[in-house]
Image 1: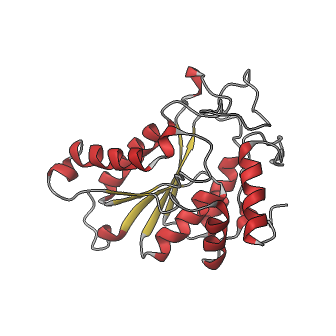
Image 2: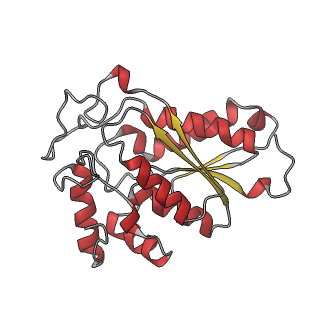
Length: 227
């Protein structure tokens, strides 16, 4: 691990390009962390979010931003990675077809590896269990379990240096997230929150992510600068 007197202040932050992860990055920085942003090109149909992630990481002052090509789309099983499966434009009960099998487990595992190499003890993710779409890997039970795994499965954990997995948005409604980010100076015009944007990056306005975003801005009584 690098010998760096500031290593203890480092944090790996998962940044997708959406408004939640942009807010999490701002919260991590407000907590005094030197943030290393991590984005995945995982075979998602909405790859335009990668450019949004670049914009967010650069504007918010991440120390470094890595976009990692990690194609999990080959396995299918999700409307976000399989173009043969339509993105739904109406809500449905249960776990939706936009759930990507084991996505957050895979992402956090890679983040954990990078954090260990960096000497960082903190990992941030924008998981939310209130205004979320039914994903099992966005629950507090999952975050707690992964943190336990992180401290069992790594040299840093065994040597007592430990990891903390932060999900600061977990119990926040979308309008609370937006108000928090606005207070911290997040430029939401840089973000994209759509499962099915067109080639130019224009949001569809009908998927779950778009509906939650629109509702959140309306309830926050803040104009969405991306529209």
